[in-house]
Image (cartoon, rainbow, N blue to C red; front, top):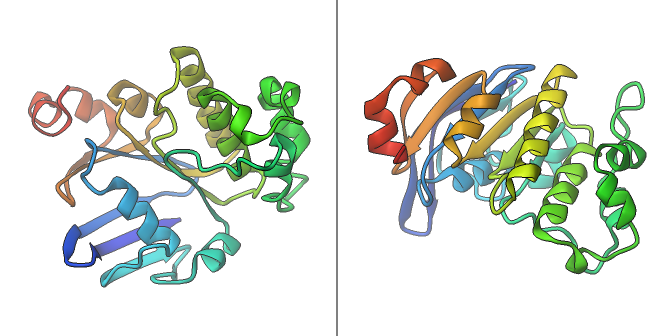
Length: 231
């Protein structure tokens, strides 16, 4: 579904991604683990065309999308749920969902389905984004990504700042999406959460992929956990 090949990305003179390569296989969950500041968000910005790489290739379904404008990447079926949620604070919950809606196959994800998935959003659907709690904002951010009916859903730190109960809901959502055939690329700091949902794991440190494996292999690799993840 997605292949990142030797990507090098800079912010001005700051060399952030230093030759990153990874894959997200169709229908699976690829998890990118790493501490704060190692380049996870920069990688996602590179994929979405927000911060294009200076070198390397990004392929989506075999098509080179390197440096493509963000709206064109989204039009191909890639949706980003950004770190920090970034919902539209002046719009209501329903309006946040409606503005991102795009028809899917066999009906796909609709505003109504999102309300069914997150009943709290139905209760708050007329409230503006600024009046939602952090957990409610994350539900809305996930819902906004889903109503675009993506082939690839890119989730940047979806559990950040969430209570354990809401984290459990996000985990259940990811499992449901995977069962429905959605491919997911997920950046996460919560080690246990990342391994629980992953089909394959990458560890990013100082702008480089330093380790990759199925999740169970990482679970038993004490050196990698201690050195790069602080687990």
